[in-house]
Image (cartoon, rainbow, N blue to C red; front, side, top):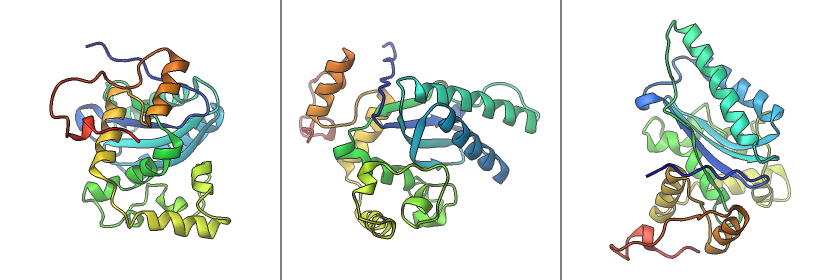
Length: 235
């Protein structure tokens, strides 16, 4: 089956995932994380893309982004990816590809999924058994969003800002969200939408995206276990 074209719309958040080729390392030393972070910040500003959450894992990255322009995320990821591959190849005297093909992404329904996706991203090091709590992982937006350690990279989304009337209350409310588990249903929805270029959102949100873009936002219903997570009705 041909790969679906990405959905790129201005002012709608996207969950973006880029993995190392064959799940191999893409960060080898602390300096690599710093270079990637700095260039992510540079290209985000250049192409007018707001970064709300991120995690830099050893062999992949997760980003929660909102572009101001339709092509912003594509321009950011292409420029960042090319620069970083050149840097890695030069630094470690290697050749060839670093990334596993194209990055993957999904449009995110802010009202219903934004804070869930943000937690999903920042909990990656915990799920990978690298750390016990998200605060113990250095290369994550959790330090900004939950602990108040200001990052020049992060632009707060309105869903985050609505958590409290000031920074301290927002951080406390956001931190409290991590006491709740992400439901298995939400977990599967995030993974499938991102990997298959579907839309992550309610039926109404998906219908709006379909009307705006002219392509389906979710897969056609098929036979099978109607009680499984993928057949559960959206909000």
